[in-house]
Amino acid sequence: AKVLVTGANGYVAAWVVRSLLEKGYNVRGTVRSADKGEHLKQIFAKHGNRFEVAVVEDITKDGAFDDVVKDVDVIEHTASPFHFNAKEPDDLLVPAIHGTVGILESVKRHGSSVKRVVITSSNAAIYTSSDKPVVFDESDWNDPSVQQVEEKGVDTPPDVVYCASKTLAEKSAWKFYNKNKAAISWDLVVLNPPYVFGPLIQEVHSLNELNTSMQEVYDTVVLGKKDDATLQSGNAWVDVRDLGLAHVLAAEQAAAGGKRIIISGGSFFWQEIVDVANSIKPAPVPNLAKGKPGSTIGKPYLYKFKSSSERILGLEYRSLESTLRNALENFEELKELK
Ligand code: NDP
Image (cartoon, rainbow, N blue to C red):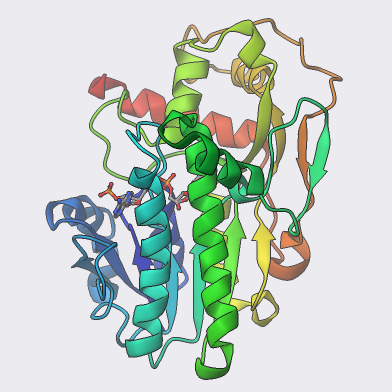
């Protein structure tokens, strides 16, 4: 079977492609320019002609995906901006929403062999920030982020804009799906991971230009950039390799059809991440930040996520310790990049 992965050069997508190839699938990965496909061709060379790159320059253009959805059985749509440098909300909202609706339109028109579309949403589309402990599940939506963007426009905090982009993109996918259900021969699965951590295999040029979630780990654990108050905050996390596998299982498991699935390894405090990183012996990276060791032990997590992933996908999760160990080893390998 053949799978289309959009934004294949991204942190998450590179692991999605790798998991698919290792399970025997043929993969077509889209990138925005041919040069962004070179590194992927190199790292996946051992899979021979089962991996190919296709260029989709602008995912917001009408019909952008018309050609690449032909002859594939499954779509894994991951391409979407995840950064906090937007000048205005539309920098994130437009590619997130139009990319998502655009690929669904293309599948409807030209994807006669497509049986399933898997979309990488986020827990950003689920949780709402809170100063008291809350438990979220797959029925929750981050509508307040959308409201904030409507009210504050260009003055919306960048993390809220990102949350709104994921919320609106996911909502538009479900709306399209429900509206077209009678006329299409595929079903929709949405995955909602929280912060994704773990080793990176995508092309990186510098330790200051990592993808957003791993940059935050590097800045926190290696460079000690978070102040004490921020170290007392947290969210939830998942290993990038578990998320890669989740994308394969989401394509395969019949029971996943029509579902929104949280893919989370557990909750964390940033101080806990720092503590776990420091507990790894021998230390893969010397002189890590310390913060206030042990100061979040026994404190209730602010955000907890109830997930159906074990039941529906049969997914098991790595421990935070093993994820951080492999992430630190990866930083050490990348250190000549500076
Ligand atoms: P990366 O930044 O590593 O990858 C993003 C991918 O999307 C790249 O291929 C990028 O292409 C592409 N992309 C970004 N903006 C555009 C645009 N305007 N037009 C076309 N393509 C674009 O991020 P991640 O791998 O972390 O994120 C992948 C997906 O996972 C996203 O949907 C994100 O929301 C989601 N996610 C990520 C989490 C995380 O912690 N990492 C957590 C939860 C969800 P290019 O390289 O050319 O910019």
